[in-house]
Length: 294
Ligand SMILES: Nc1ncccc1[N+](=O)[O-]
Image 1 (cartoon, protein in one colour):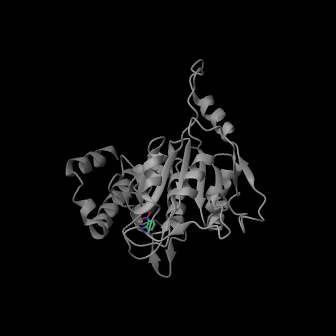
Image 2 (cartoon, rainbow, N blue to C red):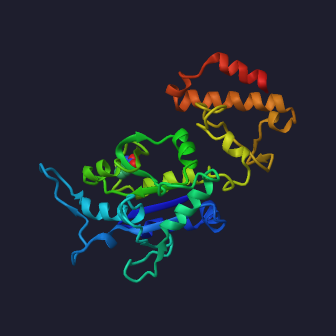
Image 3 (cartoon, rainbow, N blue to C red):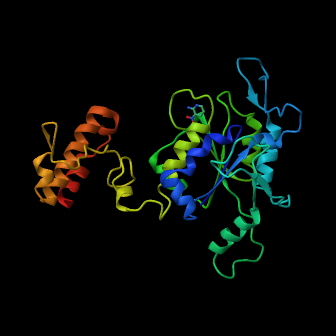
C-alpha cells in the first residue's frame, strides 16, 4: 500500500519510522511519502491560509496550494505526471534542506496495472488514490472503515488545520477521486496530523503481512464479525501471582471451551460497563450461538 501525506508539519510523521509501521515500511508493505504543503506555495512567506469569507475566528487553508499538491501527487488524467518531491517520513526537518525523494507516479501506475487482469491493459486509466481528509465534521472513523481502507492500494491524506481547508478543494477533488472526510472523535485538535497518525496506525496494522500473528486482528475489539460490538476483556501474562494478585484459574485450566466462555463473559461485562450503547446492540441469540461455537 502506498500512503501520501500532505501537511505543513511533515516532521509530525517521524513516528511512522518506528515500531510496526517502521518495519512494514522496511519490508516494502507500506510505502509512505510525506509532502510539505508549502512546496506548493509561491510567495515569499509561503502562505497557506487566510481569513475566512463571511468573517469568524481563525484561519482557513487556501485552495491553491492544495489544488497544486493534489495535481502533482495524483495528476488528473489530462495532466502529465511531473513527479512530486516528498520527504521520507522521519527525515523531515526544514523542507528547504531535506533531500527529497521523488514520488514516481508512473511506478504507482505500474504497480496498480500489475494488479489488473492480464490482457486488460489497453486504455488503462491512470491510478487514482482515495483521499482521506480528517476533520471533526467527518464521518466517524471505525474499525470497519479501517478494514475497508486497508484493502486500498493508494491512500492520500490531507492534513488541514482545525478551521479547515477551503471547501472547494474537496469539492474539486471529488470530481476525480473518492474523498472521505473522516473524524476520529468529538474533540478539537489543532490540525489533522494527529488524526492521520491514528488512521495510518489503525489501517497499516491491517495490511496483510504487517502483523506477525494474523489471529490477533480477528480478535480485535470492533473487528467486523465475531467481536463486532464487544470490547476486549482483561488479559494476563506471567507471573501467575503478582503483588498478591493471581491470574484467574480458568486461564490456567487448559479447558479451551471454558476459557473462551470466560473471555466472552468478561468482554460482555466490560462492554456493558464502558459502552452500554454497544451492549444494547448485542443480539442474545448471537451470543448463545457464540457459546455453542466454543
Ligand atoms: N477532531 C479533529 N480535530 C481537528 C482535525 C481533525 C479531527 N478529527 O477528528 O479528524
